[in-house]
Amino acid sequence: MNISKIFLSFLLLLMSPFCILAQYNYDAEAVKFSSYEYRGTARTAGVAGAFSTVGPDVGAIVLNPAIVGMFRSSEASGTLNFQNSNAKSTYLNKTNKENNFKLTADNLSVVFAGAFGNTKSSGILKGLGFAFNANKVADFNNQIYFEGKNFTNSLVDQYVYFMNLPQYRNLAIDYSSFPADYVLANQSGLVNYSDLFKYYSSSAGGGQTNYQTGYIKTSGGITDMSITIGANLWDKLYVGGGFGIPYLNYKREYTYTEEDKDDSISGFKKLEYNENYQTQGLGYNGKIGIIYKPIKLLRIGASISTPTYFGLKEQYGYSMTHTTDSSELSVQSPNGAFQYSYKQPFRLNAGASVLFARYGFLSVDYEMVNYALNKYNFGTQYRDQAAYYNDTLIRNKYKISHQIRSGVEFAYETARLRLGYAYQFSPFKKGVAVDGANMSKHLISAGLGYKGKRFSIDIAYVHTITNEYFSPYISVVSFPDYEDGATIKSSKDNILLTFGFKFK
Image (cartoon, rainbow, N blue to C red; front, side, top):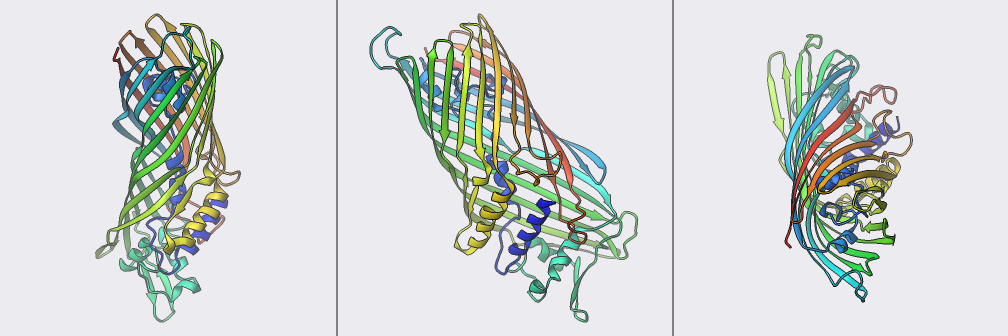
């Protein structure tokens, strides 16, 4: 499997002297961080985010800043999101489910806008608007649990394999030469060294029966805070631009265990490994957009967002417990911190919508993101590791991905009914992803709304499905023919509630 070969080759680089990077999977996190979901307000969410050319709604400003030029009056709105995440995992032929409920504020916005004269008045500038917008564009809340009986290999086999390679066998087992979990495995007695044979061996009985479990809890998200200006020109052309300051907060708790429930491994009872990891920081980006009305009922538009540059600080800690027939030993690494910069790729959006006078609209949007352009800078000390991530892992695993969003709204007097569907293609290159777990995404939505002269309320339901894959370790003993991993079907059910108020 290509992904296994890439992972193993990276471990060889990672375990070079003086490498103390916090984690192995920065490339996977880059895809997670740059995979956006455009829910915004309940109105935008009700049509699956297909709102980049329709009209004035604060949830669509993140899609196309020219939307601000379409406002004719000042208004404010806020959105609450009631989210239930479900993760169904299959690992070693056993299936488990986990649920996670979260209440978040997904959008808070205020727009100051005004129209200049009426549609028949002369002049180029027909309207001008300013928007202050905080919009959640990525959500990391999820819980995953997997378990199963492994008759073939153990996590400790991976440690033993690499520690016995000639280039590593004579290195001191410390944090300057090995990743934290390798050091903890040695300190806890899971890995032992024989002075007689000059060889490391496992105390966990690799190749014998052990019961494996894993629990992953992730939380946080990305909130894009922006200042945007938009103009209405001739009531035909709308232009806009904005400056964004996104805030990224991501937390991961991971617990992995192996246990000899059948008493088949002499002297070994259980191992437990824990990771606590958090990264957070601010970024900046710019956006420009345009919307054009060639005829009264048709609107077309496009926008581009520059790459987003983040300055991130991560904090981490690891622990491991080894239980034998007669003792228990727990060890933990020093808590660490690490600062680095991360660049997300630029994003291109385009869309078109057809308006049915006062009776609603039909809209289609398209987005392109090149996930191979994610890039890290770990500083001069870790220049080789950053280059390997950027030029080998990320470039060889990921590609340009596309997102198609479509939606329809039916309007009758003050009532609104909305339906939508979106599909996001896989970010992986061909042959890299595990079959059936390529991180493509389906989104189905529906919504209702009331629009009065000064007050509006909207509600939307959004159901999202994606499939991914997680391997707790690579089975180096039988590599590349055998690998244990969990196939995860994740779904999210979101109910969004938006209240809007016009100032006049």
